[in-house]
Image (cartoon, rainbow, N blue to C red; front, side, top):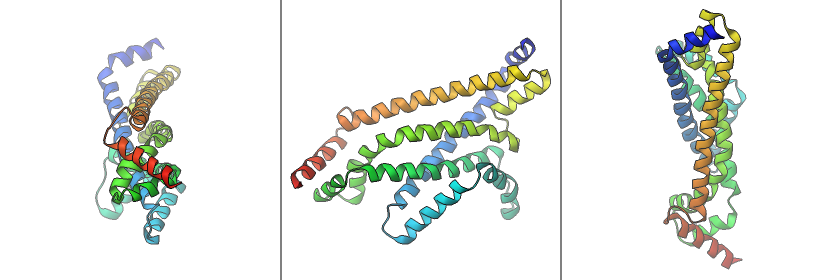
Length: 242
């Protein structure tokens, strides 16, 4: 182990570079997944059958096919069709975003459906536009429910970033794997990877927990003053209707 750690600490710039690729793939892939999750989640609640059907087909396709195959298709097959080769990092970001965005869309759809129907009706009674109803009444209540499952998906996405090694991206796993090959210290190398990924996952968990506390505080009276009266009025109106 001593040889590995001597080599590891002697090549920290290489480690930081690999760590940067892993973090970039996680952050960018998560951003794409979040955008896609909301888009498909909203589409799943749309009235036109074509829109709902498109959302369902996309979700089932990306959930029902392997991330491993999606990654390889983007890196090896896609360039043959369009004549343009994507970088390994971009392939990873797109594959992670599409795959986890499909899973995330079900989180969005479920959270929106969990908002009591009376709240939707009360927002209509307050003469709010569809955008105002969603922004000021529905999402403030649905968002705190989305965060815990989104946290799980984010951690899973982080743990899938070692797949980038398969398409020659110089991520953290690739860097440590090269160090293992040079030093012959498998136990130390993989123990180091376990610790590093645990630290990254724990940091993401703390960040998402803080985001969840903030979202709940805004909903119960500790945040945006513009959103609270709308929710309160909607609830009061619903209560009066009953």
